[in-house]
Length: 302
Image 1: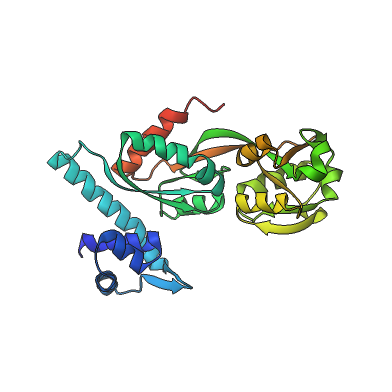
Image 2: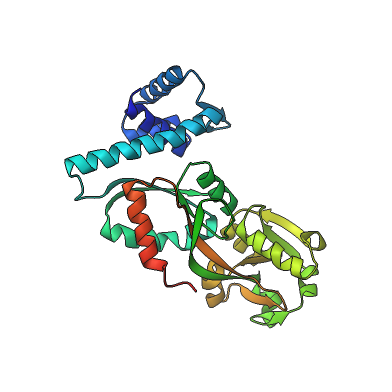
C-alpha cells in the first residue's frame, strides 16, 4: 500500500470530489481515480460512493479515513523528528465548524493565526453543531467549533465566547419594541423564522421554551432556514421575526436595519466552544492550532 494514495483518498473525502482533489494535489483526475481503485483493490472493498454531485465514503471508507489520518500524521511526526523539519509549519488545516463560529469568529482567529504561521492552507467545513460532534466521534476530525456542547465520551470543550439569542424584527413595524422586554405571548402571535433541526440556536431556544412549558408547535412557523444571513434578509423583508445570535446581528442593530427585542422570564444565554477529543492523535498543525486557541481564549470566557 502506497501512503501517497492514502493522502489522495483523504483529499477526495475532504473535498467530496475527484476533480477538486486532483487540482489540489496537482495531478490528473484519472490519476486520482487510479489511486483510489488501487486502494479498493488492496482492501478488497468499495471505499467511496456517489451521492448526488458529491463523493462520500462508504462505511468501510469512513474506517479507512480514520486510520489513514493517523498513519500520515505518524509518518509526518517521524519525518519531522528525524530530519529536523521543525523550522516552518506548513500543510493543511481542516476546520469543522457550526455556522455561527465559522462566520463571525473564525475569520479573526485564522487571520491572527496566519500572522504567525503563513504557510498553512485552510479547509473550512461549515456544518451544524451536532454534525461537528459526530465528525469528532466518527474520527473525521479531532476538533471543531460549535454553538453548544454535548456530553460525549472523550470530548472536551473550551468556551471561546459568551453569546445570547435575541428576537429580531424589521424596524418599521417593531421600532417601539426595540431593546424592550416583551412577554412570550407576543412572540406566539408573530410569523417566526427558525433555524434548522440540529443547530445550536434552535436547541438553545427549545431548552428555554421548555422552562415556560411551551414548544415550537405553539408558534406560527413561517420558514426553517439553515443560514443566519438568509434569515436576516427575510426578516428585513418583513416575512416574520426570528430568534438569532446577538453576535450575528450586532452590525445590523447598530446601523438600525433590524431591531432587537428581549423576551421576559426566559434565559437565552449560551456559549460558543472549541471542542476536541482528548485522546485523539493530533497532527503537528492541529496541535499548534489547539495551543493557539488555548492561549487566546482559556482565560477570556467565564
